[in-house]
Amino acid sequence: MAEANITVIIKRNYEEVSAEAFRYMKEIVENKKDAILGLATGSTPIGLYKKMIEDHKNNGTSYKDIKTVNLDEYVGLGAESDQSYVYFMHDNLFDHIDINESNVNLPNGKAEDMDKECERYTALLNDMRQDVQLLGIGANGHIGFNEPGTPFDSTTNIVKLKEKTRMDNARFFDGGIDEVPTHAITMGIKNVMNAKSILLIANGENKADAIKAMLEGEVSEECPASILQTHPNVVVIIDDAAASKLTK
Ligand code: GLP
View (cartoon, protein in one colour):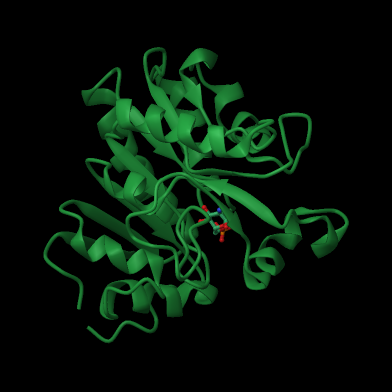
C-alpha cells in the first residue's frame, strides 16, 4: 500500500501520463522562474518533453533562468554519440527551449578520471538541490542507473550495468546489445532522495512488477525505487498497464 506521502495517479495511457506530468512540471516552472529541475532520460519522459517544447513555442513559457541536473550517463559516451544521454537531452528538450546551456548539468561519461567526476557531480548536486527530480523506472526497479543492491546512502557512482538493463536499453543502439556500454555514471540514491519533490512516471505492462514492488513491497535495496516510500513528497503518474499488478 502506498504511503500517504506518495500520491499515485493512474491514467488510461501514455499520452495521458505525459499530459499529467506536464501539468506538474509547468506549475513548478511557472511558480519558480529559477527552479532546479532534475531530469531523466529513457523513452518514458519523451512525451512530457514534447509537451514542454510545445508549450514553450505556443505560450512562451520560459526556461531562461531554469537550471537542470540530469540523473546519469553512459561511461565512454559523450555529446558526439547519438546514444549518449547528453545528446538525448539536447535532441529531445534543450535545443528546443530557451534554456541557457551553462545552466545544464549532466555527469560527464568521458571524464579522464571517473572517480573525480563522481566527486565533482556530488558536490554540484549538494549545491543544487532539485525542486523536483523526474524519474522513470527500470523493469528491475532501478532509478537513474542505481541497480538492485545499490546502498540507499550512495552518492554519484560508477555502476556496472545488469544484463537486463543492457538488454532493455539495446533497442536504442543500432548494433544491439554489443554496443550498449557496460558501465554508467549515475546520481546516487541519496542525491535523488535529497530532491524537494519527486515525480516518477511509468507506462506499460513491462513496468508493472517494478511499480508493485516500489509501492507495495518492503523498502529494500533489492528494489531501489522502494526507498521513495520514505520520501516526504512523491507523485507517481502511471498508466493502467503499469498499475495492473497493484492490489490496493
Ligand atoms: C534507463 C535510465 C533510467 C530510465 C530507465 C527506463 O536505464 N537510466 O533513468 O528510467 O532506463 O527507461 P524507459 O523509460 O525507456 O523504459
